[in-house]
Length: 356
Image (tube, rainbow, N blue to C red; front, side, top):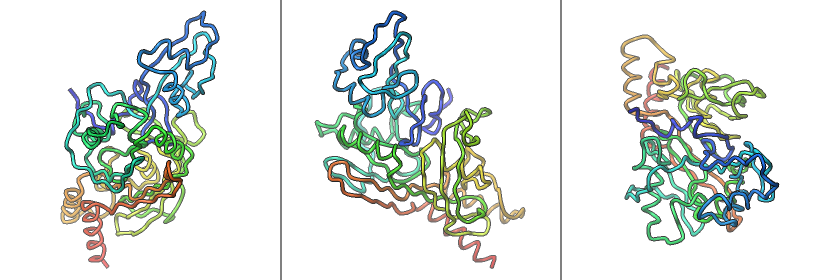
């Protein structure tokens, strides 16, 4: 059996539509096909008739959040289902195939009130259970944290994580503690009004030192575990834009700041690779090879030591800003670069200075 981590959740049978508000796409949980003789019927009534334990109000909330699709397109509650329409209910996480077990996993809570919580996720922690990771995830940790809160149901898709980052990426995530908060925050991500800034270490020194990368992101046709960049406007992939700026050139690598305009699967990782600057130690995209520098054994040993120091892709979600869904106040959070990445930067800085 092949073990798969959260970065592998890009299977066509699961992910059906991309979403600007998520680091991954939307996942189909239910699908119904209308009969050939289906009379025109509001989609909320159509679904209530076919789903046990689903109230019309809850279905209407799902439609408001963009989670009801007909033939692949979001619809409102008053959409009238026609013969042979394909009606899907999608969510921003895969289906949980097992019961969510509350686990006492430490959380680095940056902020929490009655409506939202912001956490600083460490590298190596999977966000959602699934594909072999049914325990030890951030969702399991949230189940433990909220175990005494009668208003928080970890299985309720109207609550919880509003967006996500890859297993081996560290940084800030926001959790909604009420349905209204998740809807409000989801709209902010969809409308690109949130503020998200990442720090990465990439191979080489990008020229120009700042720029805008635009290119559709979709499945790599040669490797289903990778994403790839396709021409903007093409039929392949989804529109994606990343802004980058070199913060510190370090001879053979650079510290760069990346600001997301969209949020596609592996967006920064594949966009930076597409301009020739793969993230350092990003094994999935070839960044664990020595892509710049000398051919000497001493240099190869130095790079090997750098990989051991930061044994994952060097990417950190440093800042997160949004409007508080209850108070309307602008909130802004920053998480310091974690020790493994900071140690990597310091080591490359010392090496670059030694070559001057």
